Amino acid sequence: MSVKETPIENKGFYVFHFKGNKSKPVFNSEQQHILSKGELYSLCLIKKGETSFIINNERVQVAQNHLLLTNPSSRVNGSSVVKSWDCEVYLIFFTLDFSFKLDFQEDFFEVTKKSLALNDSYIWSLSNQDSTNLSNLFKQFIHYDRQGASYLFKNQIIKSLTEILFCEIARLGSQNMRNTPAIPSRKREILANFHLLLKKSFHKEHMVQFYAMELGITAKHLSVITKELTGKSAIELIQNVLVEEAKSLLCQGLSIGEIAVKLHFSDQSFFGKFFKRNVGISPKEFRQNLYLNKVD
Image (cartoon, rainbow, N blue to C red; front, side):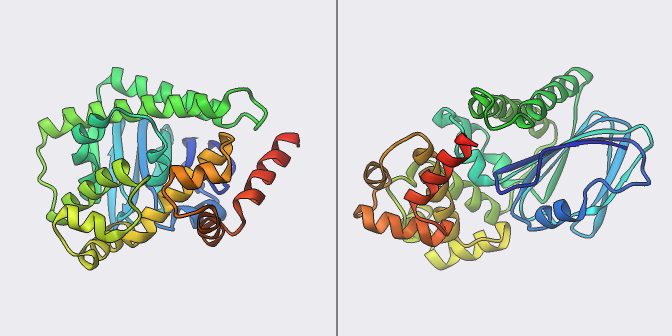
């Protein structure tokens, strides 16, 4: 088996490429632990051969030129993967927070809203050309992700490649949904609308009550739905997005005071306490660590 992987670390995505030899496990124990947390979306492209996974206690078979998509409510058993001897598979796992960092036009999420309200997993059949296009994107993604932190413009390149990948997935999803119409459950529709609203409003609105009122439900009901479908409460999802945006702004060089204003915290001190409570270190310490990593 040939496996190419990025180091497992605390980040918003993990990408893998593996081939054949069905007798060996795909993921090591550390990787299986991270992937079992149930907070990740996944895209799995079967470029060649076939493979299968146990998802929500059922084995799902995926053949050549098919794409498997799962969301955080899908319980994917990483140790259950069975591969044909000739298979070639690309896998990317990512958090919702990671997707929020991407720059899309406002109508992108409106057009692709159904993709946020999918059932536990979807399998799409791809043409040879679409499968080749996606595998080429995955190859580039893996290449640049494996470069060191000193690689010039690494983060910007990965961000751009990810945006292209998401657009391709959205295009393919639109095609597949026309071919096999699906009606999302009411809960998943609420979750999809919450994600859209959060994307637009998280800079200014930090309270669950605001989002619940906009969605026409109670704050308790919204949190019950998000907990059931993502494993996190509504306030946790809001705070996660705020933390990721704060980290991004710190990396861009904005002052702590500027970030507090931009994210509509009452003052710099309140923002600092919020950041330390959620990250474990102060914004100042986070920025110092960034500088030390660059020096190293």
